Image 1: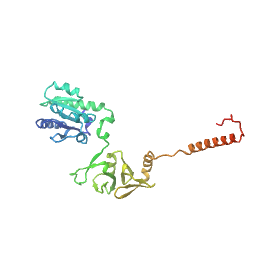
Image 2: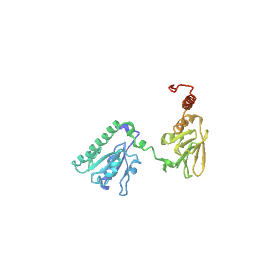
Image 3: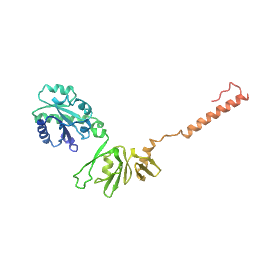
Image 4: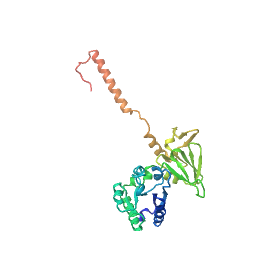
Length: 286
């Protein structure tokens, strides 16, 4: 069953005492599809710190669960929680709290085996919309590689991006504050990875739709401290206009206007005829 996650590692986070951290890390290392990507180091810890790392399982010391209860409640819709307990009696509390499972310390590889497989079985039963909390968060942040050797990864806030422009075989990310990052990615990679507020409008441009200031029929205008005119490519025109049309305030259709005018003229004619006694006052007009 582990093959299900062959292209999607099971990311783990530990909220545990230092003496347990090394043991847990070595146990998870034995599994080809699990990795410990973060741990509590004594500093302040927020729910976003865990969610932004795309964590799947959080291992929590039973002794620390009260201290981190508010955080656990916030991350519960996004991750699976596993208690690290010293006694079997603590298992009942784990299930009462809605935890996925518990493991005893010192760690039993067979028991950890069951926990990992339990997580996979539950994940397979989850609706697609719930499988990836990263997708649900709509990729508010993303990493890019501005270093040709790939040694540096830069964290970008989607809300600060105006557009992405093709640059030779790479891309340039234009930020709202004027900074420009040349990144060693393709336009296709960017298009497939960015959130729904980004839209391909030209073979050389992907815009942040929320940053658009105006549209003149052939160019998309993005204006901050300087103005950018992004051409609208013919291949992408229909999808752009379809999206734009959902934001247009519409006037009544001509048919509605004609109907309103016809009814108004009918009533004016009726009052005029009644006033000059041309028709009987009982006459009804439809």
